[in-house]
Length: 86
Image (cartoon, rainbow, N blue to C red; front, side, top):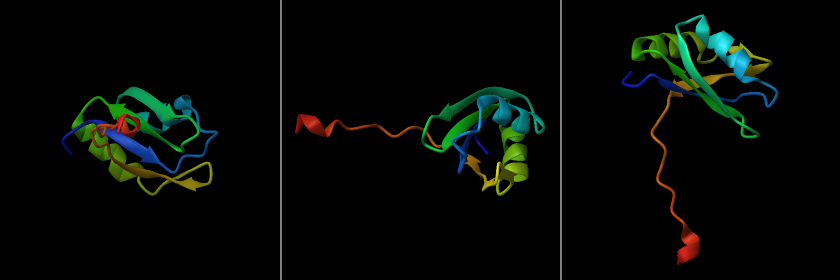
């Protein structure tokens, strides 16, 4: 794994940043947690790529509040185009 930021999908809308931080901290040092409100996903940044890999392997497919988590390496954000200009 190249980066230390993970995508976490299939979250229940009731999951909090604190819950994710506690879950991922079992697998290394969590630097930042960001949940995208009302979208069912978020991002967790670990302190190193090796810790991120360890957390991904341990938590991908695991259960949180009755939902099966999808954990993968985060991709860089896509450039957004403003189609209203055309």
